[in-house]
Amino acid sequence: QTQLSNIQNAQADLVKKQTSLNTSIDQRIKTFSNLKPLTTKLLNALIVSGAEPLNIQTAKTITRKIFGKRATPIQTPADPNQPIPNTTSVSQLSYTNQVAHFSALTELLSNISQYQPNETELKTTQLQTYITQLETANTNVTQATTNASNTRIIRNNQLYAPQTGIIDIAYNIKSYIKSLYGPSSKQYKQISGIKFTRKKE
Image (tube, rainbow, N blue to C red):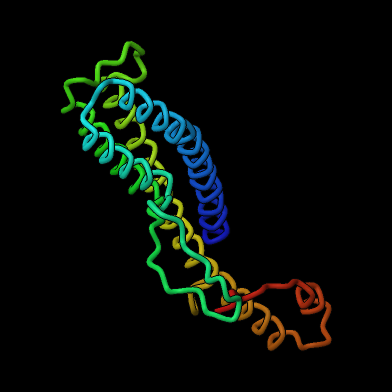
């Protein structure tokens, strides 16, 4: 009865933690959804600000990293029999990398005197607020993932741990009833059809 209560509580806790994780993932997607459109607006605002060409070029480079694009596209050989040349991936689209690149872009803009947009969402002070929101959303997912993973380990140990998990104990109980009353007994037949499945490795 104690083990049954423990596993029921562990399963309920896992459902709760998994729900929290799903909510955190949804919120992160929502928070990051404006990152690329906002980056495009920032680049365009910088281009028309009268900033130095070198600053604009640097901003374009950072923008390409946020979008995971190359400065020049991969050239496909004219001869289809020729192998495509090996290239290094430029995709740095993990959430952590996206925050880092956007932070770099914000830092660049804050140091360009010509960048003085009228729109509130494009001002560097507002961008810093958005960066905090991005970091928080990403951290929440990381923490929720850890919580769900640790809770799953606890639940799985109560189910599948050798000798002490309820699966092994259930098999031991069935064997005990079988030895006590016999394989043809009514007592054993009451429980013999109850299925318990061990976790596959």
